[in-house]
Image 1 (cartoon, one colour):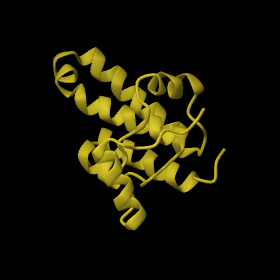
Image 2: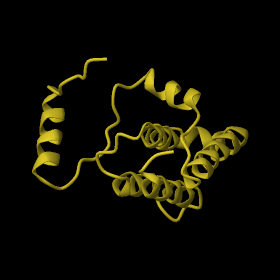
Image 3: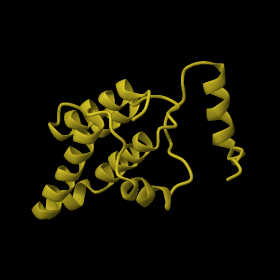
Image 4: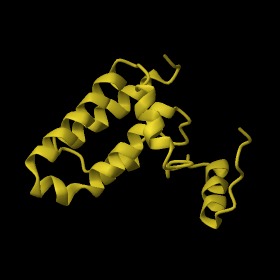
Length: 127
């Protein structure tokens, strides 16, 4: 478990709201916790992006829609309990992305993070 349980519960609520269509994916991404380093929340962020990107497929294929909705609901359930997402889910997103395009906080540090990312000169951490 992590100290970011309140952020996880917030994201779980955002995921449910997207499924219930009381919030668009775009609105959910704008309301997402800023500057999070929680790998579970980063994976959930990517899941939301993929959910939005596959909207046309969900309209054409009802089985795919059901599976994708169940997946988002599953992520919501785990995060609402404050637990880490399974490692295979986190790893599945990590292999495609170095970082998530999560918004930064509204302060000078957040401004410069966004500025450097826009210029694509972010500093990579040594592994």
